[in-house]
Amino acid sequence: MSREIINVIGYCSHCGNTTPQTVEGTLYYQGGDKDDGLYFLARCGTCQKGLLRRTECNRMIAGLRGNEDSELIWPASGDLHNCVPDKVRKCYEEAIKIKNLAPNAFANQIRRSLEAVCKEQSVPGNSLKQCLDNLASSGVIPPVQAEMSDLLRLLGNIGSHAADEEVDPKYVTVLDEFFRAIIEYVYVAPHRITEFKESLDRAKRAT
Image (cartoon, rainbow, N blue to C red; front, side):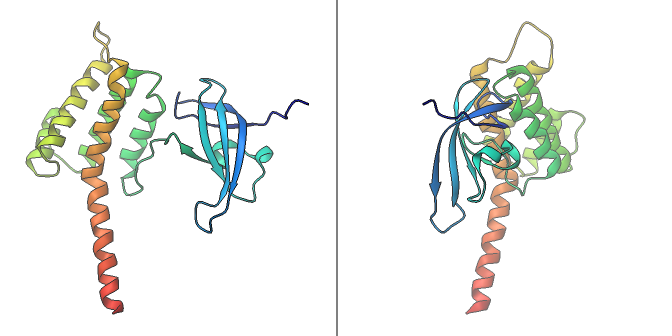
């Protein structure tokens, strides 16, 4: 007897498409915490690669609508921390969707994401290079991140112009890692420090 084929529609972080995905297997987990749920292995209908998704315990696989009813566990979708400003987050979300599809467009969109960071930080400058230099000189980012940001800018320039030179696909992962490192330093680390200090203050008041 052939097994029933069940499909869901969901985002694939391998190829960057929202695709029909075939459910290959399921595992119900109950540990008494936020990780409770029904986990299922799905295969992307476009690139044929595997994804691990999770849904609430009371959902039936056959009734899922993909992104709306399930969470992509692996590979990570590339979402930024919720402390990152919306304008920066939206620029990056547009970039991550084309990460594995169009290296030139991805590099250009990461450049736009850098511009969004500079604008959100109210950094002066008539060009992205000036803004990034001022971001570094004001101490918002240290020298290492400043060098990362300039490399992102240069690759973004290559991706945005119709020329013989193109962004090599092998640089895509590095571009993503460099940008996320800058985001971690500018937004996420300060947010976590603030959270930790507030937690310590609450603990002190409780004693």
